[in-house]
Structures are given as C-alpha cells and as structure tokens.
Image (tube, rainbow, N blue to C red; front, side, top):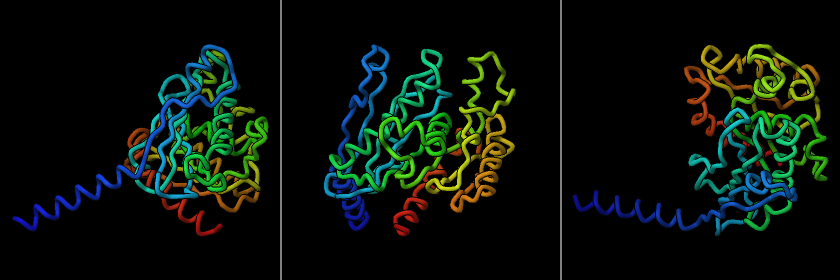
Length: 267
C-alpha cells in the first residue's frame, strides 16, 4: 500500500513539473489589418516549453466549416516538446474566402517571424488543422501565392498535415454562390487545382470513407493520386477505419507525431 502511494505521488510530482515547463500566452494579435472584425478575430495563442530550445512549431487551424470555431491548443499536442500555435481567422459569410486565406497566411508568416521568441525553430514549422483548418493548410501549401504575399515561401514549411481537409472547393464557399454541398466545384479555391511536384511533404489523414463528411476521403484520395502523377514523392494518405469526421481527430495526432519525427530525422 505504501509503495503504491509513493509511486502515485512520484507520478503526480512528475506531471506537476511537466506542467510547469510549459506556458501559454493568449490572444496575441497577429495582424496589421485595422478593421473591427479583424481586430476582434485575428488573434492566436502560443503554448511553448520554457526549458527547451529550437523546438518544432505546430500551427493549428481550427475547424468549423469556415463559418464557426475558435482557436485552441489541442491537448494531444501538449507536453511533447512542441511549440503549439492555435489560430483564429475571420469567418464566412462575414468575409469572403480570399480574406480567410489571407488571414491564415498572415498567421503563418507571424509564426515564421516570432517562433524564436517562444523557443521554436522557424525551420521546423508544421501546418495542420482539422476540417476547415485542414483545407486552409492545403491551400497555403499548394498555392504559394498566399504566403508569398507576406514574403514567406510555402516550401519553407517543414510539413503540412491536414486532418480531413477538403480537396475540392469548400462546400461553404460554394454555398455563398448558391450551390449545394454535393454540387462539387474545382476552381482556384480547390487545393487539387494547384497540384505540384515540388512542395514539402503532404500528409493527408481522413476518417473511414463510408463515414466521412461528403466523401471527404475520396477527395483526398484523388488529390493524393494527382500529386503522385505530377511527381510529388512525399504525399501520404491515411484512412482511419471506423472513424467519422469528428472521431478521426484524436487518432490522427499519432500520425502527425510520427511524421514530425520522420521529418526531423530527414533534415
């Protein structure tokens, strides 16, 4: 009994020490935009280790169909030696998709310029997020123009890992044009429109094809095929059997961790 109590006490103390080794700074304004909605929304949180240096930096874009959602630091990314940046962006239909993508690009540019202040390494940035957040990351990866606006090369991101991102034009972008979710469009707002062979590793993770939202796995499978056909050597596709659009998130973090480790080994 005494030994069990001692072990539990040691474990509790270890957790307490671990928690003290990380800090969170909230509601950092990352934008130069001055309108009221931008000033309200364009903030981010940074969770970072205080006793480590040159850490990988994970930029997390929240989901919510580009119409809802709030910045977050996913619990599964805490305590792993990462700097984690949770980003808010403006939402449809208050703004157009161009403005949303510009917000996402501005946030990533901020991370490049400020990572070192939070013990991160700007050469080890990973862009990820779920659903709408994954969609935004895909477009930043494949259409280099968005980050170029902020004098950032999209290829300087170490790794892109969208969780259940949409490969065709997002259904809520189409809704603003009067289209239904199953009226598929591929235009400049579709990641698959921009397939190229020279981008960083792209890790596509989706839930079960029979359970995912609006054929999301099938879109990602098509994107993966097109990326391979144009000659991209490091496109990866995962299907998480038995998981729907929401439940696929938690097991996806294991895949993210493994690909971060792989990317670091390959540097």
